[in-house]
Image (tube, rainbow, N blue to C red):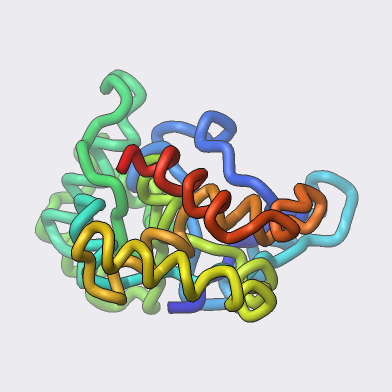
Length: 226
């Protein structure tokens, strides 16, 4: 899945500690499948920083490997479960994190909805009436990557396209993972291309690509504790 993040700068490295707490799905790195929504956010944030907004594109790996390493929560629509979850996360009296999911996906509590959430919490609108209103709200979408493990499933698009440059290194490494640990090829490839070792390999400034693939393989094993 291709995802988008709007900001005032291009995102090179994601630091969860810099992410704001008490948002819809808690503290985390937020992206959306709707580029237009990311563009709108980039414009707003860009103006606050007196610069043009920037949209960074990411590829989200939704493979079986992702399911095996991450606890994921999906909200298909605005409903009572979604509302209770957002209220829980936005409550600043709750400790962080308020939930144990690595990745949370669902609709957005935009400014209009947030105002109505405040009305609901203030007792001026019932939960039933509020949920009825949400049925007519335009479609929105967000995914929150809440943990470092979750970020391993997310790669910047222009960064990911460098994979082809290093296939001559990656192919024997993936094959070696298959033979040494009895992984299937898909899992082995996910482990390599989602690793910090591959990130360093694709960063040409490290010059890691000049090393023999066996040395890079050993770095990968050390990283994965294999």
